[in-house]
Image (cartoon, rainbow, N blue to C red; front, side, top):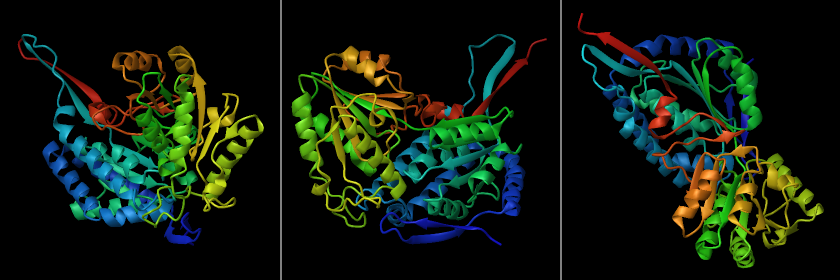
Amino acid sequence: MTKEFTIISPVDGKPYRTLALADGKAIEAALTAAQSAKKTWAQTPLATRIAAVTKLVEAVLATKDANAEEITRQMGRPIGQTPGEMRGFEDRARHMLAIAPHALADVKPEAKDGFTRFISRDPLGLVFVIAPWNYPWLTSVNAIVPALVAGNVVLLKHSHQTPLVAERYAAAAKSAGLPAGVFQILHTDHADSAKIIGDARVDHVCFTGSVDGGKAVQRAIGERFIGAGLELGGKDPAYVRADANLAHAVENLVDGAFFNSGQCCCGIERIYVHESLYDKFVDGFVDLTKTYKLGNPTDKATNLGPMVRTSAAEFVRGQIAEAVKQGAKSLVDPKHFPADKPGTPYLAPHVLVDVTHQMRVMSQESFGPVIGIMKVKSDDEAVALMNDSDLGLTAAIWASDEAAAARIGRQIETGTVFMNRCDYLDPALAWTGVKNTGRGVTLSTLGYDHLTRAKSFHLRTKI
């Protein structure tokens, strides 16, 4: 009997679509097809691969409006915001395509008489991409486009919350005329995903998800010597320095904390404000938060939708209740947001003060619409608190002094440092993390390094 799974839409709690899980026969067929295709695809000229992947990207963009609406239906982001994900998809895809000839070119050391020496960048083989639900197009494009362009074949498994994204990719690959086995999708459960990771035909894994999920990937790899790119989460801090533009900091940080209902890998989860600006910052932050509209994400006036599922919202509610019990103060009354209802994924944004790092809400990833704000006396105190985490994806500094921001940024244990902005990926820069946020790099020229292996050529031309 064919096993199935159903997407439950957080919009109304109703079934949205039911799809079949791949059985053992389908999984074996996909791995066999990938194995057959990878040698030919690797030997295909780079210009041909770029042209083919460009067609895939164009095919995705041809249905971008429908794709955006499906994001809203599957995971609940407001319909007025989901088109932005498709713009981000295009930006990242086109950048990685544009830099490919340079990024994949042979590395040539200084000339040496009598020898030809260079380092080629060879594809790894089969790349298994496991993509999450919170930004289903943006997280997946980071791996899929450069992996294919570099000469790898790709097998995609998407979250069961957003599997229609995988279906769209498959249709685009078919429309683009990619050879059989070069790009495939599978809907699998955790057990079968682990089996695929452990299969000798898989050469690399790209995973975006939780720390526990990353540990499961590592266990599935076992004693095999393959790489894994792991982006595993964040508890991203922001520091509002004494010389910050207050209005700009407030506006950006409210958005950075609550966009996508706080379900952003690099969303702001904790804020440290210099004591000279603290009271005004908190007042402005609360006032702007109260202007948000929580409600049905298919309503264009909504700018704060439900969380992805009720259990996720209840987890955040638990963090908030625990913090308040420990002495934190919540400055936004949920009654200001009539759509907030316990037992549903609709959760009002919460602004907490009088928080400490002994509270889970300041130390454990929330991934929801809650923010804790602490007062600090100095840059040094801010740095110490920002580093007091086992996660390190991004950190943001609001300041007028660029040199000071850079100096502070060099002291922060993080993958990306922002000044006067947050919650953003620049495809020209390496996307990476430290500590339990994981390892590996996507985007930029360095992203291609992690999807290829170096091969050195040392050719003696004079005997």
